[in-house]
Length: 248
Ligand code: PEP
Image 1 (cartoon, rainbow, N blue to C red):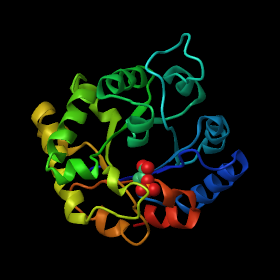
Image 2 (image 1 turned 90 degrees about the horizontal axis):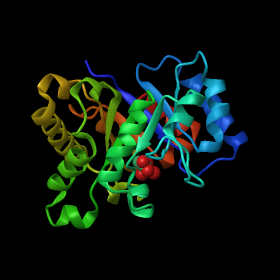
Image 3 (image 1 turned 45 degrees about the vertical axis):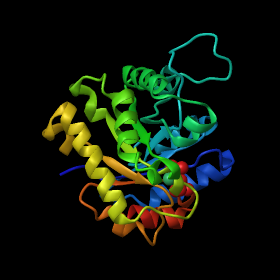
């Protein structure tokens, strides 16, 4: 059976004090969760969160890292630095970084390498815009994002990759993909992974859904065959909402 994961992406939200309070509430309410629970926090909060998370079950993630391990890159944070802190996961290829920081699949493939080389696990995001879906280019686009970002990897490291399908038109809009739309794309993604790495590897790869997931729609989305949990933005900022999604 595949692992079920719920990851909260706090984005650029919460003061340190608020973040630690939110973490404590999430951690105490998800202790018995059968799903793996992950919190992706701003860089400035990671050190304190890792210390709090020691011995607990909630894993800590960063929301980005640089593709080089060190050097003259003012303002950047390397995978080595995250690993040094004790962070477990890093989100790469979120659509906000693709859009606002112009991150290409080629750049992301280097970030994936940097993260894996530092023993970080990667949550690799893919997703199409509304225009791409309306012009029926969404399956090819997702195939390309996955192929160019990940398919240089050896099969042996695939276990350290979690995929997240996040249609851009559903992120932060309140407009969720229907469970049928999510299942259709997740099945496509699993097929693409199987074509490259074989069915056995594809069958153990976790594919999360992200895009306006909330306590009301999570259960139906997560009950789809190829949906292995969620990457949660807005609803992860509230402990009650996020823990309710973790229990869905
Ligand atoms: C996200 O940004 O990863 C996300 C899924 O956001 P939201 O849940 O707010 O749509």
